[in-house]
Length: 293
Image (cartoon, rainbow, N blue to C red; front, side, top):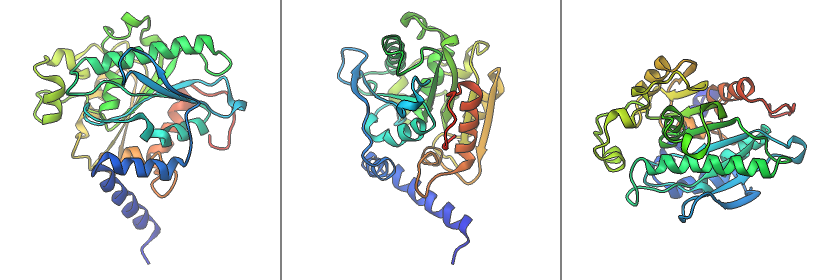
């Protein structure tokens, strides 16, 4: 028999490898982890384009009105589907949070900064929704969270005030940001994904680490020490520059590992989930004591 710790690591590593093989595998993983959970509000528009929609999941009515967490998924800015992240919604709604998961426009139909602008527009829509439905969702501040390219989107739209200001928001409307395996310091663009998404955009316009970060809310930056897709130095560098940032480096964990750590069966990793729960309690608590908390 394998020791329990080794068995757990092997299972998580195998699942991570499967996820990296393609988005169809992510759909299977999502169904395994989330079951038949459905959004309470599906395909809520935040703009006129087909991909400018979001799904909203609400916690149990006993936990409402709930603080809102907006999740931005990764996919190299050229792929992604909000429906495949219901397991993320399940995780955070069980902790007492409302969860919005927006789709956003993708490469090659758009390039930077369109996907950042979409994220800001989604936040503005949720502010409007909260104002119209105060029995379901608390108004700002909101939490942002994301994995990989989604973590970049969440951080960048706050780091550069040119995105929140046009939609009537600012950094004070964001309670905190959770970034899992995010790229924040990747200039020059030396891989196809960044070349296709950013073209000849100057570093001063695309790199969070090149910006004045004095206004940033608290950050939780989690990276795996075996991440060869987005190197851990991205999180380390941002943590050095941001005024209030916690850096967590998870041993023996690759790029997908920080994402599947938020799952429920076999892949749960408290090295990720523990700091996430603590960050939530510290930055925007639900005000409701639950077994999951």
